[in-house]
Length: 128
Image (tube, rainbow, N blue to C red; front, top):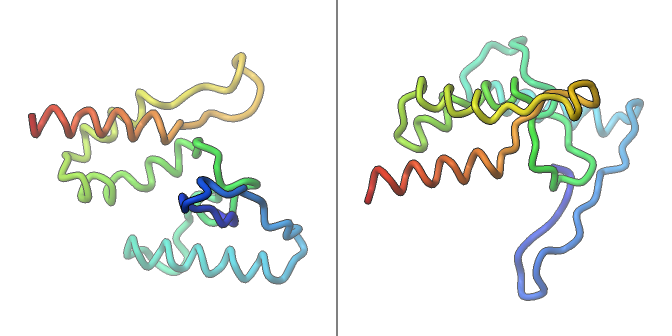
């Protein structure tokens, strides 16, 4: 996210976009660095494709949605962090894929907040 936000004493501060346009050298540098960091973290080849929404900053940094490709890309990492079988997490991600609005407006997406709440509920079931 390009936004700087926090939960300090004054609450959540306003999110904002970077305002960097497609011809911006800084945007290109940021995207390359983000893609490299993502590939390194996932132990991928230097030219391995990565989902665009994981390397570009969103307009506000506060959108709860990511692409299904971005959610699927993170399954191994999240499953390991949550001590969960990848197959179970994959099925949960697929249940949270929402179609384009009214079937034609926008793109398919995953609401990360809802997915995380579902994951937390599953964690609570395991421990309780």
